Amino acid sequence: MTKSGALQLARSTGGSLSKDQVKSAVDQYVKYHDLHGGEQESRKSNYADLANKYYDLVTGFYEYGWGDSFHFAGGYPGETSREAIKRHQHFMALQLGLKKGMKVLDVGCGIGGPLIEIARFSSTSITGLTNNDYHVSRGKEHIFSAGLSEQCCSLKGDFMNMPIADNTFDAAYAIQATCYAPEAQGVYSEVYRVLKPGQYFALDEWCLTDRFDPNNAKHLTAKAEIELGDGLPDIRTTRQCVQAMKDAGFEVIFAKDLAQDFPCPWYQTMDPNYFSWANFQCTRPGRIITRAIVNTLEFLRIAPAGSVGAYNVLTSASDGLLKGGREGIFTASFFVLGRKPLKESEIVNGGNL
Image (tube, rainbow, N blue to C red; front, side, top):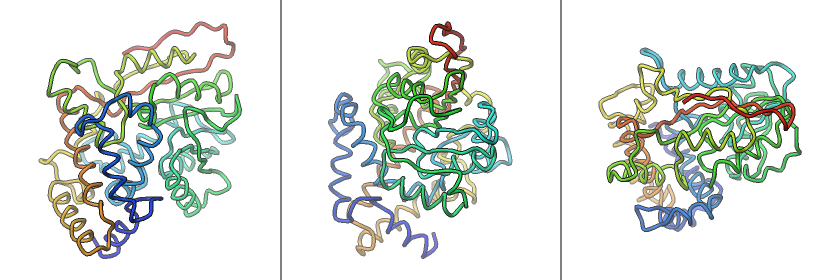
């Protein structure tokens, strides 16, 4: 890590929180989770606070280690993770048939990395929706830097109750973002509402697979580590995801776990046996060095108290995601393409697991 990179990480830790709030935010955040005595119902009823605390605490680390796109993608030999991520974003655009003149919604847009790439790729106008103030401000900065302020915007709003009129958009997508919703049908129904009739929603979702056993203690531990490390109230199954899309009103055109399509798994960068200079921060040596730097920055009071705790949350994420991916009980890329019928009377069906 360069000196400027270390200082940027120190400045960004805490997001929109004041520096003296970081440690208490970490303490409050972890208490939501099973591994620290929390309960699922509390996480669901406080989903907005849960996600906001999480992203205020970890966004700086994400930008340092992951760039401006906070999601996974399966890959091919010789392809960097960032190349795979961009290819995945292009895949989403192609599935929706995006073209110039279309108005598109990015549901849970983060700091704007995917919407910038997709806007450039498709020449569409994209509105990014996020409920985190820090993400709104960072998104606006990235959009401005990309020269896309006339084409894209970052909007503050809860995706369970979108501040958007009915039948507004020509297409919508969500890339590994609606997993933060307290229940799936609610967020999918909101997407359905703001889409124009006959238009498509491309969903990329974090899910438990059919191999997950709720009576297996190791499976439950991996699930709890993912929830703790990634700010999730719960993790739905692939079948629950498809059913929720149908219950929201969508015709399910296609559903598949995309993780099955790639020789290089989506969790490869977290594998301790994998090494890449392009993703050094995510490798085992990179994590050891990053932890040492964060410890030093906090000790010197350059980074706020609680920074190490925030980093520990992310290591829980890596541990749980790696276990879940290797065991095949969790996928970070369950894809569903849904269509809003032209008329409410159209039969909703289709979809294959």
